[in-house]
Amino acid sequence: MCGRYALALRPPQVRQLLEDDGMPVDYPLEDEDGPGAPRQSYNFAPGYHGVVYRADTPDWGAGPRSRSRADAGPHEEDDVVADKAAQAEQPPPSQVKYKLQSMKWGLVPFWTKRNPDYQTIMRTINCRDDSLSTAGGMWASMKNKKRCVVLAQGFFEWLKTGPKDKSPHFVKRQDGHLMCFAGLWDCVQYEGRAR
Image (cartoon, rainbow, N blue to C red; front, side, top):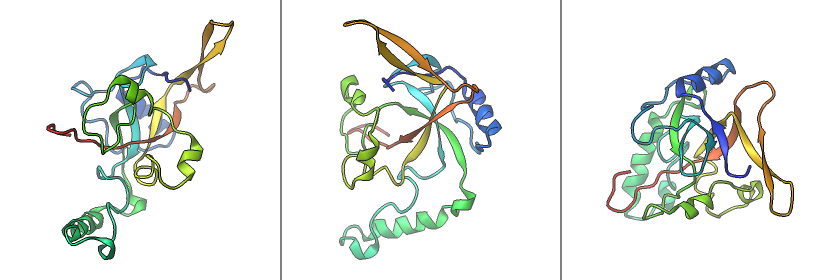
C-alpha cells in the first residue's frame, strides 16, 4: 500500500457493514463530528483521523500493564498493585466487547514528547511483518497488546507507465465488503498537554 486508502463511509454505515459480516460493534463511535472525528475520504492520507475496530481495553492495551510484583522496583510496587486491580475488572476473553474508535493514521509512540511533523508521521504508517516477529524494536510495546483493525473500502497502488510517469490503481474487494488491515495503536501525552 502506497500510503493512501479510501473510506468514505460514515461511522454508522461502517458499523452496519461490520455487523453484517458478523463482527459485533458493542460501542459505536462516541463523537462523530467533534475534534478528532474521523474523516470520510477517497484519498485518506497519513495524519487524518479514521475509524478503526478494536477490543474495548484500557489505554495500555489488553493484558497486564507492567511487570510482576517480583520484578518491580521499590517505587513501582503501588503501580503493580493498581494494575492487578485493573486487570481484575477486565472481562474474561469470551466477554470482550468491541468498539469503533477514531484514531490518527501514523503511529506516534508513547515516549514522544512533542507533536511530530508530517514527515515523522509518514515514516510510521506501515510496518514490515518480519519486524514484528523479532523481539525488541519500536513495535515491541504494542504488538501483543495494542492491536486494531484498520477499515478501508480500498487502497491505491501506483503503476509506472514511463520513466517519470505513474498511474494510480484502486484495489478493493470484488464483493464490496470492507477491507480489514492489521493495525497497531498507542496513546501519547505531549509535555504540557492533556492526552
